[in-house]
Length: 234
Ligand code: SF4
Figure 1: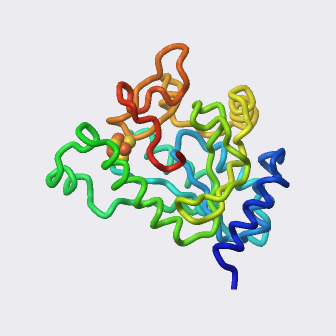
Figure 2: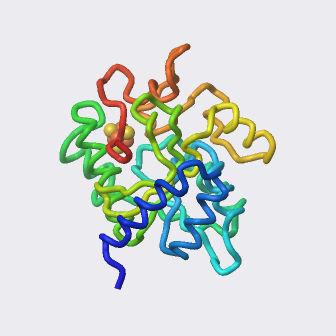
């Protein structure tokens, strides 16, 4: 039987061995190591990571699970992008992770938590659903990049995710904005229409603004508040 300690060792060894791996190499390693026991997270800003994962999918794997945190507060464009991904990539199985309470019930009980206590709102609508979904897998793949924000500057390609107790793979951690945008252009990758309107980091509608000129992409998230992360990655 493989234990958590074993998976932690796998992560620690891969952190060294795959420190300079390409995205394709990291994803091939993921499929080889975990079979169908991993999930690819997407905020549906674009389908770069999904496209890479589908291209790295071995024939032995029928589908790739893609995790979408369905908070109930998304832009219509984000939901549309999720649906377009499902139509574009038949090998993708969307896993919608939802909070225990529908938005209407949460607002009836607590009011607008995204205004009064966004940390609690993110905890209920993102952190807990993520944790519950990840508990069914031994690895997850994220689109975190070092250039996203100073808090992400040291992101390795593979790491042990202590908070959620599984292996975390960040295949495009080292990608620059030029590499990222070049991949979208060269491969005709689906993008959330809000990107072309200037939203560079898309989260829930009430908590997402366009970043100010010269500021990092995530500066438009919870603008005006000290909060910079949902509690998913940092
Ligand atoms: Fe709530 Fe905003 Fe967090 Fe979404 S990003 S879960 S609306 S606080």
